Amino acid sequence: MENGLIFSLFPGIGLLDLAFEEAGYCVVRGPDQLWVGDIRKFHPPEGHAWGIIGGPPCQEFSLLRRLPPTGYGVAMLIEFARCVTEAKPEWWLMENVAGVPNVAELGHIYTNQLARDYTWRRFDIDQAWYCDTSRLRHIQFGSRSGRRLNVPRGVRRNVTSQAVLANDDRPFEEVCRLQGLPAGFNLPPFLATEKIKAVGNGVPLPMGRALARAVTDAYSRLPGQSPDQLQECLCGCGRSVTGNARYAANIEGDTSACRKRAQRNRDRAWSQGVAA
Image (cartoon, rainbow, N blue to C red; front, side, top):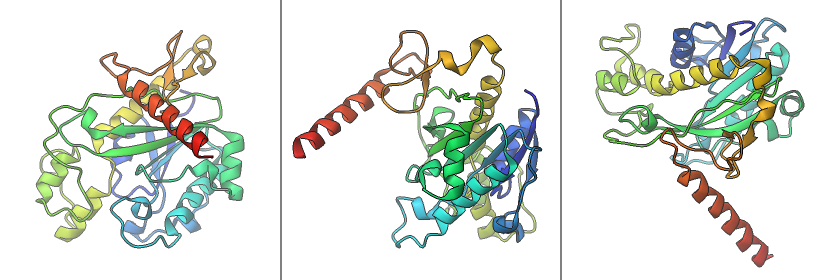
């Protein structure tokens, strides 16, 4: 690891930041609406950040949304890309809901630059792989050196609680527990509904810790263990495979999820070809 300084965009109360701090990184938080900040006025200096993390507002991409998009969500994705192109870090990581578009394919000057400068991949991650709460998210990760994150697909077991929402009606203490925060965590200056919204908008700590470990592992490889030796899973999940493997395995070595996804992709391509 050449430099552990990480810039955090759209930090909220800093749950994703906390996961990276626990892993030994120094995280510098950018502006956030929660603290009366404006990302559009933020211009990170070039050459100081080793990595950039962040979760731009996801409401407009959520499947739960019933109103038409205003364009704000895409605008914030572009702001994320702008900050990356200005700071020029080695890598960047963006967390969002499954419905978010690929930030490097938005066709804007900043997102086009992102696509030129970085090798990027997209993959899914579920909080239920690490605890009894389910929360599906998609991660987009780019690096100048071509490194890829390897977050093995987990196994969903004993899911007893649904994902925390910004407007969750469960007690604040329960919301904190489900997000992985320690007992007694509090936000004294906030009203009760504001506390739940702030915690609910954060990245669950178990998920953040998995991502921080993946970044550490990716940059702990020796030169002889470069990402050039890694192949991509044929299902398109963004995960890496080694040797003669064609599909990525979960933590128990099972490749069935990726095999099924690949078959669905083949079936879809066949049906579209027939329809054409």
